[in-house]
Amino acid sequence: MMKTAATPTYTIEDTDELLLSQYAGTGDRKVFEILMRRYEREIFSYLRRYIGNPELAEDAFQGTFLQVHLKCNQFDSSRRFRPWLYAIATNQAIDAQRRTKRRRMVSLDTSAANDGDNRPGSWADKLVAEVADPADVAGSREDGRWVNDAVAGLGDSLQRVVQLVYFQGLKYREAADILGIPVGTVKSRVHAAVQRLAANWQESHEEQASS
Image 1 (cartoon, rainbow, N blue to C red):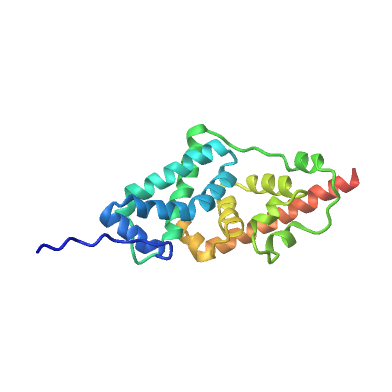
Image 2 (cartoon, rainbow, N blue to C red):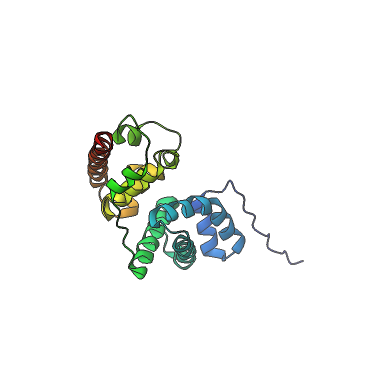
């Protein structure tokens, strides 16, 4: 009597790496859907913050998982899936910005002037404080606009490390893998970003106080 092959089962407890390997070998859409559901909110939030436009973020999100599908056989199973996924998402965000030739030009002075609150403390304190979710800093009612505009004004290289390390909570090593740069470079860029943001915070709020 011929035995029928058992249907493979997949659970949400399976590791990302195992699921991607299974998808590469079987093409089973259920596996892909588990991966996508696992990361859809996190990646879309990252892309929306990075690009600053929900429509472009949606396009980049779709492009990200299309690339996961197309490149699943290229994934190195000895490495972690999450940094690989973020690397794809980052490239999709960059491509979206290039296609639209959209450069975010912001004025920190204008942003500060539009917000009438007198805010104690420094940007450096806010950025490096131990909080459960670094995105809560940018999401607060009183500081959100200033923080988003200030980060967008850092320039691409510094903005990327801030987005990954602080807003997404990735480790230095993971950010280095995503960006294809040494860990030491990530650390130096984080330091430079903190110093620049601290100076901008101080300058804008001194101007606000004097006016």
